[in-house]
Length: 475
Image (cartoon, rainbow, N blue to C red; front, side):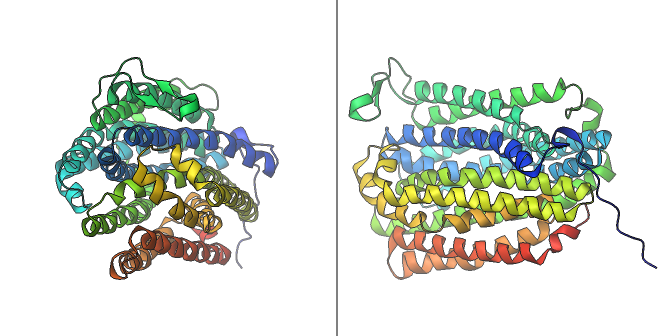
């Protein structure tokens, strides 16, 4: 006779005793604020490049997309520890949570170091593959080499923040992002732009009193100064935590192969999923580069501005995806799969609904949004019609990302990786090449392909979530 299933337990940690709406609000508020700050950091960099030249904008579009791909892989490496921390917190197992943090941090740092050295060594090859030529290529290469070698700073920040959020304590990450943003904004402005540069619209512009005029290199240096600040805040919080908070203890960084294997079993499919996500976006850059080569222009700059603005709608997906991952992992750790499903469904509907509202802004005021990012005439003309395309698929964009987060929190990273890579490489990329290059629709055709694939991805992950297999994955 089969043993009865274990009875659900109440959650431990900061979420204990709270209703589901309160738990969602606690987990969403801080990540939403921190993701806005992370988006703002990238938006400021793009806006600075947009006030330098179209060439600088194109170089930064490729440079930041490549850096984001590296950051996504680092996040994937951190997700295994986060899933184990969530399960351990749900069970009230503090020592296991601390062990997962230490082993996860060591793994994330190792991945960041190897990845940074790889990209720094191949920066010129990658930039050439993305379609950059002439004076744009060395600018992007310099940006990539600076940011790639500083990638371990992001590993500390993302690895620590993922584990703290999984334990139900997302607030320190917000303060780390705020500090990072303040340093990045100040340093990038002063390092990248020359003195006397006018920033902003005519009626409320600001004139820089001084600056070094280092261009794209100054943006890169400002970014890593910001990363160093954020990493210091996260590391200080983890090292000096008290009470029930997650704490980083030195000996937990030493290899413990059983814990490391448990983490890596979740992390490597998550990294593969992130590779599909970021690598698919980067491959689209190569298609954009082919369009640029045909047109003799810089659609990379237009593509970069649109991508950065669209990132504004991505903020709710990230925040609610983090909340869904945390609650799913903790409720499964507490042997309550029914409540895990309810939590994931609540995060999905709220987050995707909020993203739909942001999509309405893309449809209503695309020109205003683009003017906030650049003063280059060719970008101001080409970007708004394409931004309207982005407004049409935001519900499905949110659906895919939030439900992926829920299943990632459950440890179901292999199915996520398989589905995401099939869609990114089997649908998005060939369709973008067909519409953008084959039919000659250019950048508009590429974004129509992105819209079609994203809508399909939302429907696929709705089907996968409804199947419920993710709730039975062992971590």
